[in-house]
Length: 163
Length: 180
Image 1 (cartoon, rainbow over the protein chains, first blue to last red):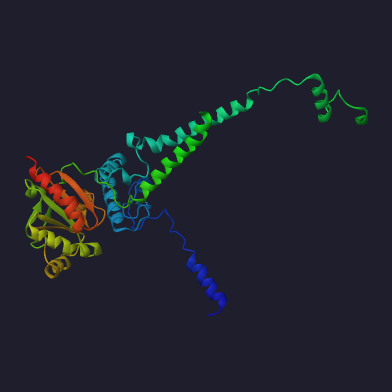
Image 2 (cartoon, rainbow over the protein chains, first blue to last red):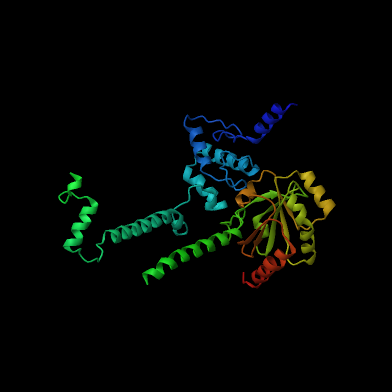
């Protein structure tokens, strides 16, 4: 193998593209038209407990296969999304949900960012207010003022050289 | 005072954050707490591993403190756990029941024959449905059930001598002293 081929192979081996997230690994058949989409939407919201950063939709873990089949059967039996979610939460806890319910234990994740934002805005407000507050410097006397205006080149106090 | 706060507030925020992150280092995200603790064990009726004609169900197990160990021959950690389990069974401290999870019956029977059998009875859960009801997401997992059939503890991962001495035996002593 020449150098270029080895380089190409190395690059190709390094780039491991993730599998498209919209395909499940088994094929389930649905008689009603929206069924497949509802099934996929639901299992995309459920976390696989084995590969914890993957949803049931795209995990290849054995348990994910079983749970997908379980969800499919329940949907075919006419169970609602809420019923299926309750079934899984009763067994695996809120951890199976990518979308955690709002309850005291999750207040921090749901409202924490807004609290932080409010604190940040409050601090910003204080800082701005302090900046705008007039300083307690003594007023400048007439002579100093004239000199200052001259240096700053304010209109009305122009010297001959300016005109 | 305001000047002092200017230094103390960021320090406090830093310490809080550092504390949280430090705590996070010792939390294993693979250990998902079971919502079944404190709840009755899920109902099941399964064939026995050693005797396919006979069944075992949750009602057979009521009235006694026992351990339910989820295992399979395809599970490497279960092999690591097995000798500990055997030793523990020999002490006779508590009956150990097995839930043979998504396994092949001949392989599981051979395993017990070759490595020894710590289990009082094994339930054979070929399709893993019962395991899903128990919230199992891997093997080995070990449940401790009290006399009223309530799940009181779940240990995820292989049992070790330390786990048995520090977690399981004290709890079993407590459960035994409870009135049923």
